[in-house]
Length: 231
Image (cartoon, rainbow, N blue to C red; front, side, top):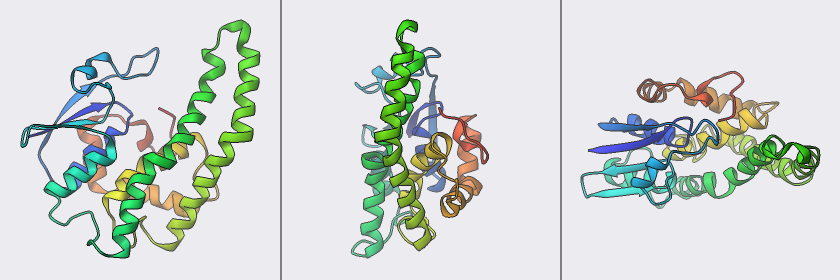
């Protein structure tokens, strides 16, 4: 039996969605963020030494596995039976592997920096907040926002060339890419004047499997098709 150790408003939503796409049975162990720090609770440390989400356990093979990309590859290879991945030795498979790893390796770091620097003035001691605000504004204006825009424009251009990231067929790479696009829509206006990014988000949110995952896990901030709040 597969168990998803699910943190609210997190990347683990993608794993639930993938399991629904594969029509696999699974259990969910729910965890709530600390209301002050918004970090995962320490109870996740009992499952994985880093205390992060997503993590899955699979009693078939006694597997405990973290990292979204690794989890997706494991589930696709073991249970996919050819679903949600292009045939190997095709150009689409190369694109599939690229986007599967690009999502966390390249897309998420600037979005995470934008979130952290956006929070910096509020987290600084009161006497230092004006200085923290200037540092935050300067870092975002000069460094972070141009990188975020570069990535968002890249998504728009890529989705203008094919309906899905790896080609014209929906794959697990689209599931992996969902979180960066949803986060960027919430934090950086990814859908502003980017019709293909907006259309991609509407398509994934309309998928029955995506909706079933939401039904199983409960509220998910990024599922809103309007203005999606940051987690």
